[in-house]
Image (cartoon, rainbow, N blue to C red; front, side, top):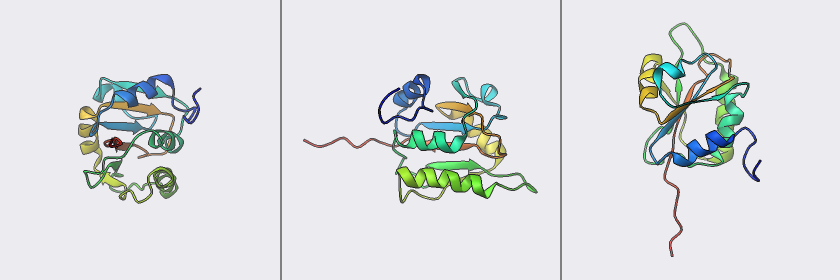
Length: 146
């Protein structure tokens, strides 16, 4: 364990976050997501819900400020609904770490899958709430001048 790093962030995920560059995207996927068929870099976080994992990750990386939507959730299919409590838990994690961040965007399911193919990596979690998937776009870490 390291001071200041969530115990949900294991060594493989910590290394992966370190290797990501600005503009790279990380998909936090629910337990049912087809991660291995969409991306060659997949980590497992079985038993871990996305909201606390998102909170831990956002305490370590910047969100991309050069795009309108650095966070994008999968949009429910017609006739389905997004669990409002889940969305609020994600927003709470965002606001704790990056107050004032833009609203979480939405993306149609198959477009989300296509974007996942280009993502830096996928973390398949233990989240069981339908449409709990979210993409995080990493930003530039400010470098002190001088």
